[in-house]
Image 1: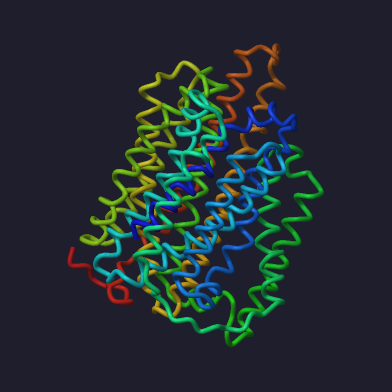
Image 2: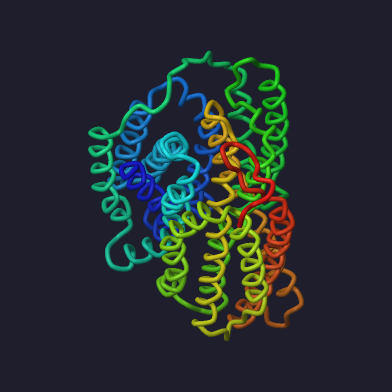
Length: 468
């Protein structure tokens, strides 16, 4: 577990840390903003294509084989990215990095499900939260510090030793946890999965880059083709005796409820990670470094509280965490709609801390509770579906948020008598951000209603009357 957590943490950290360096990379490699965005789009696209196949891979290869393959991919990718002397080399490193993460993260979830009993999974999943929530949230601050005092390649150089240590620890202690059943690979399912999930992630990622937005032919075509392929993929899986992605997981009610709530979390989390830094820099006129530092307390507290939330889940179940969590998230987002360029730093930091605590109360408890209802033979499929849909909804959340932000800014500036003045641009950013926070409040309210139906799962069964 230690090895998997270390490797996953630094894999996620370098993923989001590089986003802060895009402006520097545009100048260094003489590339446009849409081209630079491929460092993010390419990463998400690779995850979207490979993550759905993780359930199949965990049945075809041993735990040690998958771990070794993912770590070698991550180490080589990190080295290539650190040594990159042109954009193409850096992009290749990012794609290879995503390939490694697409195997490592499902392996981490599956390991928790196999080696921990139900009553201890919450605490273990709390540690997983350090990887899946804390590391991406810490990434922009880490990237800002590295760029401020060193240079962008050190984002990768500083991660490399920890990945090597993680590999060596894993090779010494990691055991094979699952049986290799060597299922037949259905080529049509692989093709449909690749086109379906890859097309949707690519389409929403491109729309979120704000290049041509939703009117782009590439965006419309990609999303449409992706959705059709996903539909055919579902039909194909239901007709197979040994599917790549076993959709029988949807017969388990608490897994479905957990899945819905889990996919809502990245839509709020990822949108806030994109919109807040933009507001702090353009709206409040702060530097990227200062904006990164302001988001650090909330991100750090999320990481510190994640294991505690896991232990509380083990003791009390999900309902007493998830329902208050959505209330806190919704309340913080409402206060975010009151922000202005004159808002104090302390107020913004306090709101961000509250938002991160609320998300921490929701994300891991509902995910753990949902997976607890699955029988062991569906663990790999359940984690594959959860992780894949989180990538898809994360891309959707960013795309919709950026689109709402741009629309709000354009509307404000079209009614302004001095649309080029810095003060008016700041006011436009504030107006657009308010619209995004209102959209996120709607997601929070939907989550709150669904959370009412959460029931604790004990030994694969819903607990009808909780003793707590």
